[in-house]
View 1 (cartoon, rainbow, N blue to C red):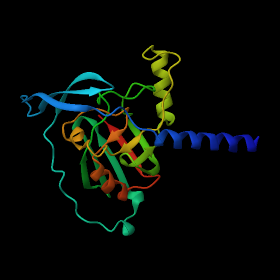
View 2 (view 1 turned 45 degrees about the horizontal axis):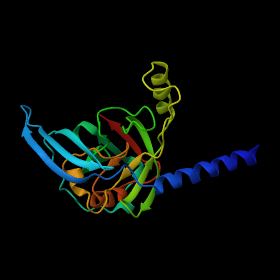
View 3 (view 1 turned 90 degrees about the horizontal axis):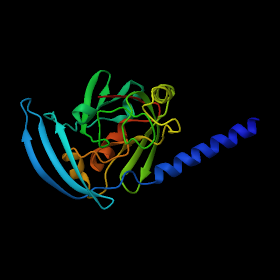
View 4 (view 1 turned 45 degrees about the vertical axis):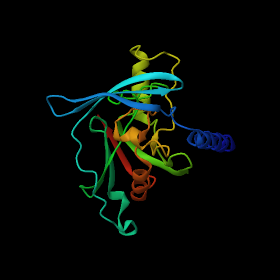
Length: 228
């Protein structure tokens, strides 16, 4: 019985490794801004068009006024207690913040899936999960610099998933999904973050330059809080 559990664990870890080696959502191509205006609250309302898997997609994003993302004060990470680090993801503000001992030390622009303000309920909905998580693993990735995986699905994720099935919000045979995390973009994809294009399958995407700065401050076990 113990040997069976070990084998099942090895199979799961191998499956996760394969999934993390795969590419995320299809990369938008031929991106162009159709229109861009400011609303009464100072938000940037931007309509963009791009090709995804050969299909022309039109997407409207509403980006709030962005706080400064330029602070890159050097820190000696070796002397920091990373157990005191919190990763805060604010989907409505399109940002990821690093909070160390209650002080915000880094902020990065970020994008999500096509509908960033929805919580993830199942595989294939392309939504970013909300709630408390922990960093599970950090891996190099040839396509987008790093893949920093979180422990989705966790107990709370399964609870939401099962409640959604009971309410008929998702199909009864829907799977919960896996392999959610933080990553960069392809070499030509930094503009997707700048323009707020939701292109992932539920992951949090920053520019590759930012993900290479971000990963230095985190390790497996660091807490992650994702909210709208």
